[in-house]
Image 1 (cartoon, helix red, strand yellow):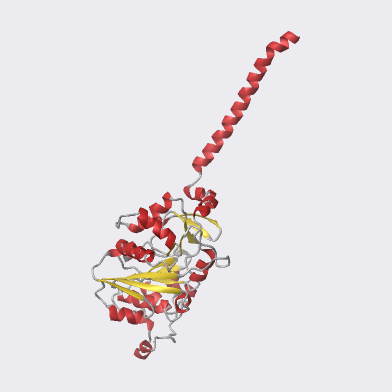
Image 2 (tube, helix red, strand yellow):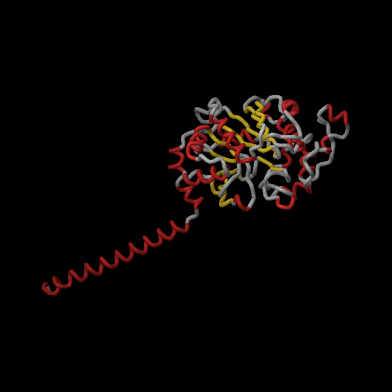
Length: 337
């Protein structure tokens, strides 16, 4: 019996080793398959703590050290009706009027108006007049370069002249600015800016984002400019750089920016793609809302919006008592609810 037992021992160990090896291989295969199937954005969530450690640029307003100074940057080019409406809306913005956020206006060689009109529309703004048109990707790059050259500003918010803001946008930024130094306040539902998930607290993760709505830190911009040398398709190169650095493209569940322009370098009534997801239309001031409704009917922006005033006297007095009925049908047809 002892001899027989001695001869069986190696076979028993071999059998047990084969079983353990099989179990280990199966567990490894399941883990590898799960990892491969995990989406790009879910991987961002898994890496978030690691990413945050590398980008300690910002803390929420209620945390020690929130001392950021912000600049809002808008580029104008013709489309006088859009610019006039944007100027009237921004004149009511609490962050601008309260002095918490400064304003920079870069005019890209407009021919429908000049410096005198822009100064009247944006009396509180720093104004840069370009004499040769550069189009959107070049002006975005110029705005990033300007921001880097003015380190007194730690945050830059990029906005378009055919858009309007929920007045609570700045409170959201102060409360939720990510440590990565990047977010966008514009939640687009365009197919090419696909939303992958909304499993990150107040945030949704998107595959890409245009410059509209971007909020970026000076530290992050300096890194982008150091790596991205080309001026061509600069906004898309920003997206590519963010992907390489594993920085999520975060947008709020409900957009704080409404894009109302049907005419522009990348839009037309027949190919309108840039629609806001969940923007609160009731947040628009009543003196501006009729004009937003007007532009959302795809009216040509080469004239001042006629819906803003009921009389020439109201035009002179800024039209603060406009009583026009708001058109909710326009809201439902334009803004994805």
